[in-house]
Structure formats: C-alpha cells, structure tokens
Length: 341
Image (cartoon, rainbow, N blue to C red; front, side, top):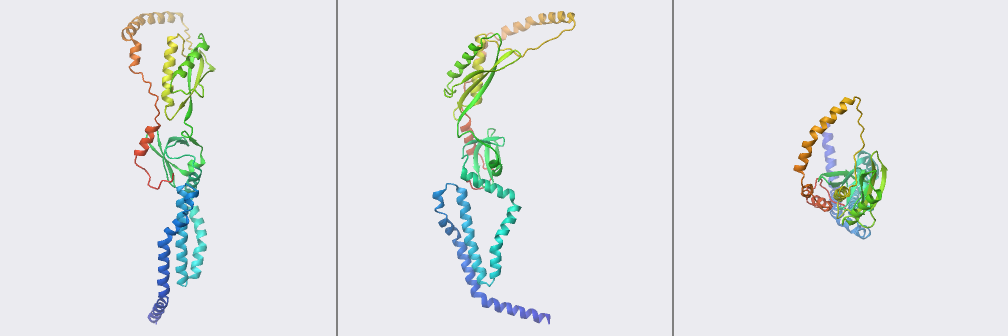
C-alpha cells in the first residue's frame, strides 16, 4: 500500500514537472539573461556616477549593488514562473532582516567598510602621503575596503583597520611640508647671553636648509642649576630636508662656535661633601699623581683635534621621504585587494 502511494506521488510530481516545464525553462532562461546582463546594466546605470565622484570605492559599491538588484529581479521572475509567488515575496522582504543579521554578525567588517567609504569620500590623505595615525608614522602605500597599509621609516609594513584611522586623529605631514624643529642648549651664567643668542641665530640663518620664513628664533627657555637654557626654533621643508639631520648639523656647528668663542656650556652642578679632612688630602695627592699621564696622552693623541673631527663631519641634510616612497613602491603587497585610493 505504501509503495503504491509513493508511486502515485512520483507520477503526480512527474506530471507537474511536465506541465511546468515550459515555465521552468522560460524562468531559467530569463534568470540567466538577467544574470548575464547584470554587470553591463550596472555599468550603464552607474556611468554618470563617474562624473560626479572620483572615489573608486563608491563606484565599485554602487555598481555591485545595481548588479545585485538586477540578479534579484531575475530570481523573482523565476520564482513567479515556478508558481512560488509567496516564497519570492518572502525572499525579497526577508533581505532586509537578513542584512541586519549579517550586519550584527560582521560588525567589525561592516565598520571598516563604512569607514573606507567615508575616507574615500573625504580623502584626508592620498597615496604617497606621510601620515601619523594612532602612533604609527609612515607612507600611505595602499587602501582597500578593510585596511590601509603604511610603510614606516624602518621599512616595515603596518596595516591599520580603516575604522581605526577614521576614529583617530590623522596627522598629514605631506599636506604642509613645512615643519618646525627645536634645539636646546645651555650656556654658563658667566656668558654674554645676547652674544650667544646672536651667534646661534647667525648659524641658523646661514644654513641653507633652514627656512628664512618663518624666521628662526633663539629664546631663553629656562634657568637651570648651572646653565641658562636656550631653545632654538627653526623651520625646514620636510620634502627636501630632514629635521633630524638639520638639527644634528646645527648642534655641531653651534657647539664648535661656542667653544671657539669661549662660551662655557657647563654640566649640571655637583656638590661633593668630604667628612674627613685627611680623605681630602689623600684624594688630592691621588689626583695629582695620575693627572700628568692623562695630560701627556691628551697631548700625544689629540695634537690636531680639528683634523680628527673633520674625518667624521657630514653636512647631509637631505630628506628620507623619497627613499621611503621608493621602498613602498617596490615592496611586496602584503594584502590582496583592489586599491581604492
């Protein structure tokens, strides 16, 4: 009896398939046509968007959404021809609920994707810019829908999620290449402060890497235990000169000039307390006994200290930005994905 029931069901199903076969064939054909034409139709519909925005990410997302809508229309027609009208309506109405479920399940991915959209529209930086975000400093090498790749000044690749970049302060060093740097130097209280300031200012004005505008300044910053501390302010173009190299050259020239002009740069004052006067006499004798050889060694080894210094002298103040950009261009891309910048 059960076998007969199963056979009857199979016969009815076979007859139903034969009746619906033209509709099935037509529905599959229509769905195939819609699926095949989804990309050309999406490209045609989003073509005016290329004139209104230069963001590749927005163009890609809009094109995919249009393509998905065309495919869903073809699927809806297929289900209607198969007699599954209620299922088709439920499918289309349930996409919103499905989207909410997927959004909660992939919150971080959605957050990074939306952040990439906003960054692509606002464009706070571009490829090759040097930026600092969340404590990371480097050249922008690539941005995808998930993360942005920086190449730092150690040559390392740093991938930052786009949500992290969007939610943090972005410091763009390329937007304005002019950067201010400072140098601290202490001179003795017996020195002529005005003369020391004028010497330091002349050295900064004479250096070609130091910008004339804004004008460099030498100001008294603080009073220490044994020194009056001067702070030097100067500006450089970071695209052509390195702040670190310029600071190194200026400090060296200032120290050499101060020594030549007998401007003292004493160390912090130290006080030594001797409780027993006999210890003072023994210490004095010990220092006198061993001072002569040291003096002889100084005379024998440093007869021409200026020549010895010049062997290590370097005035290179060139910027490292172009070298880092070249490394970023030649480096292997650590993440696959289409660049959206």
